[in-house]
Structures are given as C-alpha cells and as structure tokens.
Length: 494
Image 1: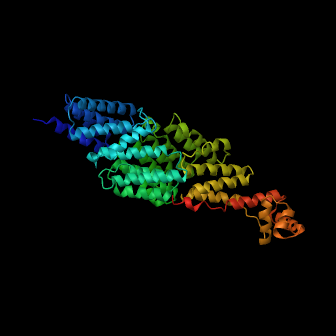
Image 2: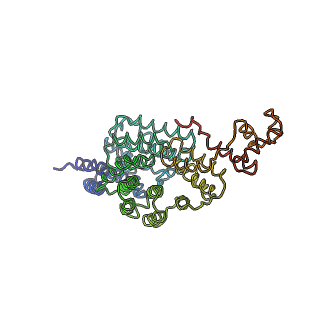
Image 3: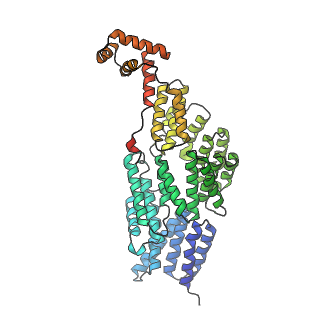
C-alpha cells in the first residue's frame, strides 16, 4: 500500500533541486503530482501550497505566490486552532509560506503583500534564527531574502560611506549565519551586486570567485559567471572575460528560466566584446534567448548588453535596433540613460539637464561616471574646458576602486583639457594667488615683491601659454589643479 505522505514529500523534495538546476517544467510536474497525494490531507495540502508559493515567487509570478502562501498560512492556523499538532515537515512548510509572504513586502523589490518592511524583517529573522529550522532550506531562504530586503532599503545610500559599511556588515552577518550550511543561497551574488553598485571592483571580484568555486546550483553558477565575465571585461582582462562568458552560456543549455537565460547570454555578449566571436551574433542570440515577456522583466540586463556593445565600439544605430527588438515596449526608467549614452557614443552633445537627472545615488558608481564622462566630452566640444575638468574629476572619484578601460577613457579625456600652465617656480607662486582672485598689489604684498615684478610674471605666463587674460590663465591653472587632486583614500577600503 502506498504511503501518501511519503510519496507526496518525496515529490516535494525534488521541486527546488529541479528548479535550481534550471528545469522548471520538472519542478511544476513534480508539484502537480504531489498535489494528487495531498487530497483530503490538510497538512499535505499546506505543504504543497507552500512549495507552490515558493516556486511562483522564484518565477516572479507574484499574485499567484501571494495567494498560495496565504492559503497555506490559513490552513496552518486552522490546524493549530483545531488542536491538531503540526509535525516537523508541516511546521517547516508553514514557516516557508511566511517567508514567501514576508519576501513580497510592499517596501521591497517584489512588492505584492501589504506587509511593511519592519514587520517582514521580524518574520524573516524569527525564521532564520529558529533553532528547529537550522540548516534547512526554509531558514536559508529567510536569511537570503532578509538580506535582499535590507540591501534594497539601502540602495539610495550606497554612495555614502555609512551606507556601504552597513551593506557589507549585513552581508557579513548573513554569511556568518549560513557558514557550513548546505544551502547558502544568493548571499555571495548579492555581495557581487553591492560591489558593482559601489564601484568596488576587487570586492565584487573576490565574492564572484568564491561563489564560482563553491556553488553547486547551476542557476546561481550561471548568474555569477555572467557577472564575473562583465567584471573582467570592464577591467580589460579579455581572456578571462571570454572564458567566463562562454562558460555561462554553455551551462544554460536546457535551462528554461528567463532570468537565468538572460544572465547566460549577457555573459556571451561580454565574451564576444572581449574577442570570442561576433558581437553582432552575440546580440542577436541575446535577443532570442527568451521571450519578449521574459526580456521585459529584465530591462536592466538588456541595457547592460547594449552598453557593453556601445563601449566596445559597436555602431550606435545597431545598438538601438537591438534594444528595439529586445524591448519593443521600451526600457522604462532607463530610457533617458540610453538616450544620453547613445548620443555620447555618436559624439553628439548631451543635454546637461537631462544628464544630471541620471546622477541619482541609486545608480551604480560606474554608471554615474559614464554620465560625468559624457558631460565632460560635451563641455570640451563647447569650449568649456573648466566645466569638463570638474566632470572628469567627479568621474575619477567614482572610479577610484574600479580599474579598467572606463577609467582609461576618463584619463584620455583629461589629457585633452588639463593643459598645465607653463611657468617657472617663481611664476607658479604668483599664479596660485592670481587664481584666488588677488590683485597685483595683494600678490606683491603676500610674496614680498614689487607690483611691477608681479605684472611682469603674469605677462610672461600669458605669452608662454598663448593666453590673453588673467582670467583664462587662472582657469587653466584651476583645471590642471582639479585634475591632479586624488580622491579621499579613506573611502577606498570601505
């Protein structure tokens, strides 16, 4: 005689492993079969509903996830109110349903429930630290999803030292809690994302390397291989970018999750940009890797692919065609960013007001540096080298811990506008005070010179530098000074 509970739970145990291996159809089929064994057994129905809620959440089918999780929670309350005790498997499933609801807090990245962030974090932390759930998938989900919510809440503060410190502390806490657990989830991937957002290349890279070495889940491995390919492409480590990107794509065979496939083919684009085949073919493959609906859930990833293509010298017209084919309904909040950087790639001037709108703290440090670089190029073409120098210095500060060709482009642009003033040491002393707005008499008094000597020094500098006014001389000096100022070293290790 078949033991329905044994059979049902055996099938449920295969659902998440099938999902993380990239076989969504297998997960749903096992879940449907498990549901047949759960008829007339409220405890098993609770377990099936809880698993269904979790899979819907992974598939980003939020209304369905919320409905199933709430139904599971209601069944649990009915069983407890009726005096029926819950065995360990059913109690864990109930906790898993709570995790699903809390993960969809209205304040998070997947808003669907009415739960507020503070309440959701209480629920998730209770599950994460529940000794009866230690080392279970449910507790690991709670730890990972709580970290995701906390990082999401910090997204507008990651440009500050305080915000970065809190993010890394939260990541460290999650890693400590999960140390030695069989399922450590997405903590390392979230660490890579924080490093990329903050422009901290080495931190992003070290976490990516660790996850590549340790993860056994194919979906997670594909995601982090793609991120690592993008990181190495940005750092101009082309051989590594080619290997990592092609590995991500090859692992995605038979995976049917849009979020995984878009990661895999983003890695393929990075590999192609680094020399592994045709970039045009890689972009076409990206556009075909999933449905338009699947791409619509990941517009930022399509823009990453387009941006890599632009920055590797691909035709702006072809990049626009790629975006139109991949995201025919547009890029949402990325539209302005696309317009500005495509205009810059065409060597057209960008509208300063539009560009400045893109410098929000929630955008990554490299993205903001790209906008500053576009503005600098515009100002240089318009004959405003001092404004260009200030934009380049801002870009430099954002790229202080982000090596590679983007910083090289900033330096190349800086060389076009820096133009140090040709002057003797004595003239430099006069120049420093001239740039502060002091008169010849004030400079003479400060340096113990005659007013005539100061005038002679200024005239000599104007002739040597081909300038006609002390204002132009001061501006050139200030530009050169601005572009030699180094960012605050205290921020580098944060």
